Length: 542
Ligand code: ADP
Ligand code: ADP
Image (cartoon, rainbow, N blue to C red; front, side, top):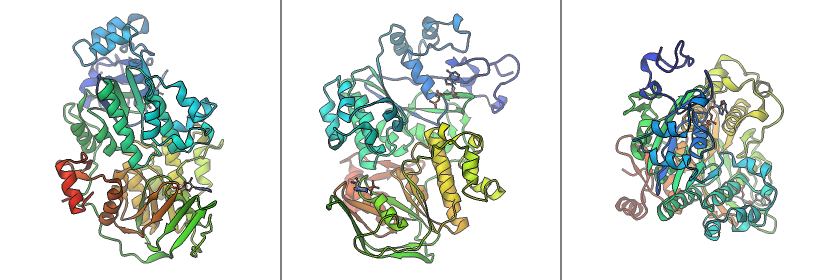
C-alpha cells in the first residue's frame, strides 16, 4: 500500500513506487471513498498574480471552491471529523496559513470569471450595460470598458455577442467587482494577441495598484508568462486525483512543465519534452501550387467593412498559419475561398473542396460522438484513423458521450477530428487551440501536422496562440488594418517575415528563453525590446 489507502491503490494509473511526495500526505479534499482527491492548494497572495498551469479535470474548480469558502475541505477524512480549525492546523507554517484563517473567519470575498463564457447568455437576460452595471463596485467600469473596447457593444443584447466580445465583457464584469480574491479561469479564448496582452495588463494592475489577490488558470504560455508572479503546476489523472505543486517562479514552472519533469517534486509528468526549435522558421515548402488566387475585395453593407486581399499562392502539403486581430476579415477570406461568399472584385472561383472548422464550435446535437464521427468518414475506427486522429485528440474516453454533454475542450477536439476526417483539398481550422490545455494543444498541433504530411493535405490554421502557430505553421499569412472597418491580407510568406510583419503591427517583441528556447514576450522598452525593434527582428531573434 502507498499510505493513501489501507488496501488496494484505487488509482490504477499510479505507479506506487514512483508515488510523488504530495500523494503520501493527506489530500486537501477527497469527494468520497475512491472518489477524486485533490492534493495541495494554490496560495493566493495579496498584490500578486498567481498562475495555475496544468490540464483540465484536475481539481482547479474544487481548489477555488475551497479558497472561496464554499467547500469545507475534509483533508481526506470523514467530514464529521474535520472543521476549518483542523484545516488551519494542517496548513500552519505554509503560504496558505493567513489566507485559510481569513476564510475560516468568513472574511474572504471572491469574484470569478467562468471558463466557458459561451454559457453566459443562458444565465443572463439583458444587454451588456445592464450586466456590467450590476458589478460596478470599484468605480472602474468606464476605464475597463474603454481599455477592453467594449463601448460599441454596450447596448447590445448579451445573446448577440460574439465569443471574443463575451470574453471581454466577462473580464470587465469580474474585474469591476470589489473583492479580496479574483479567480479567472482562462482569459484568452477568442481574444486576439493585442486583447490578450491588454487583459493580462489589467489583471496585473488590479493586483499591484489595489493590492488584490489574483488567481489565473491559463493555457496560453506566452500570456501566462507575462501575467503571473508565481506559478503552481498541476498534474495528475483527470477524474482520479490532482496535485497542485507549491509555488514556483513562473519561468521555472513553465520550463519544468515543458520539460516534462518537475525538479523539486522529482516527478516526471510526461515522457517527452515539448520543444521549440531555436531558429524555428521552417524552410519554405516547395510543394506544387494548390491554388493561385488573384487580388480580391469584399465589402459588407455600404462599405461598413472592406477587405482587400493581395493575391497569393497556397502550396500543396503545407500548413499555412493565419494571424491578425479580430474583426479584420480572416473569416471573410475563408468564406471567399470556400465559395460561401462572392467577392466584389476578383474571381475566386477556386473549385476546391474545403473542410472548415469554425471558431465557435456549435456541434451540440443529441448524438453520440462515435455516431457523429462515423457519419463523416468511413475511415472511422480503422487503425490508421485511431492512431492519427482519435489517439492524439484523446477521443477514446468520450466516444460514447453525447455531443451536447461535452465540455468546451472536448467539443473542440471532436470538431478538429471531424474537420480532418472529411476528405477535402484544403482544411481550414479557425482557432483550434481554444479551450485546449497545453498538452492537448501540442498533441492537436502534431496531429494536424502529421495529417498534412501523411495525407498530402493542405491545412490553413487561424490562431492567436503564438506557440501554437510557431509549432504548427510552415508559412504565415498576415492580416492588418482597422478592425471592423478595413482589413488587408498579405500573400503567404516565410515564418520569419510573417512574424516580423505581424508583431511590428502590435509592437511586441519576443526573446528566447535561454534554457528551453521557448519564446517569451519582452518588456516594452527594455534593452532587448529596443534592439530587436531597431533590427526588425520581432520573433526569431538570434
Ligand atoms: P477542473 O476544474 O480542474 O476541471 P474539478 O475541480 O471541477 O476540475 O473536478 C475535478 C474532479 O472532481 C472531476 O473528476 C469531477 O468529476 C470531480 N468532482 C467535482 N465535484 C464533485 C463532487 N461534488 N462530488 C464528486 N466528485 C466531484
Ligand atoms: P475575423 O475573422 O478577422 O475576426 P471577420 O471576417 O469575421 O473577421 O469580420 C470582419 C468584419 O466584417 C467585422 O467587423 C464583422 O463584424 C464584419 N462582418 C462579418 N460578416 C458580416 C456580414 N455578413 N455582414 C456585415 N458585416 C459582417
